[in-house]
Length: 162
Image (cartoon, rainbow, N blue to C red; front, side, top):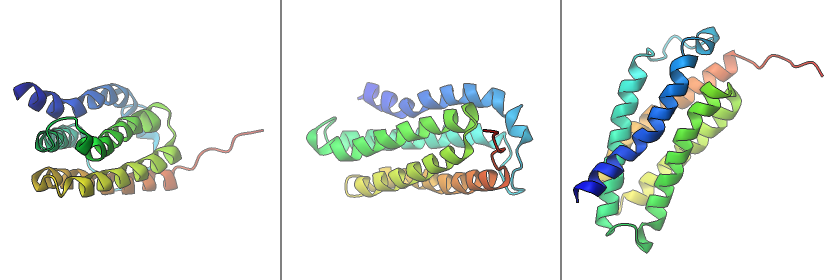
């Protein structure tokens, strides 16, 4: 049981590592040019928070996987929703930091937050512990969505000449 435990707990970090490579460059260049709200967390907090959140959600997915006997018919919806939110999570960084598409990133993070909430609803009857491990993630996404919105609102796209 160690291999599934370690694999499912580590899986979310894969996208986080790739996202970090994109963010590392852009946070020192493009991101500094944006107007941001005064209440935003310091840049140094983000890798610490995401490492914690990725570990919690990964371990939660393991608990659900284990409780349902692996990848079975019963696990299709709860682990499918989890996989969908993970893909949406991994997509946000290339959209926001890589492509500089703040509005699209805003739409994407709203979809992500909804998918995380749906994942939690599907997990609750299976493992309350797994669901509770997702609560800090959902709370952080609410903060991230607010931050994304403020950055979008305060940094309008420059008008393009036709």
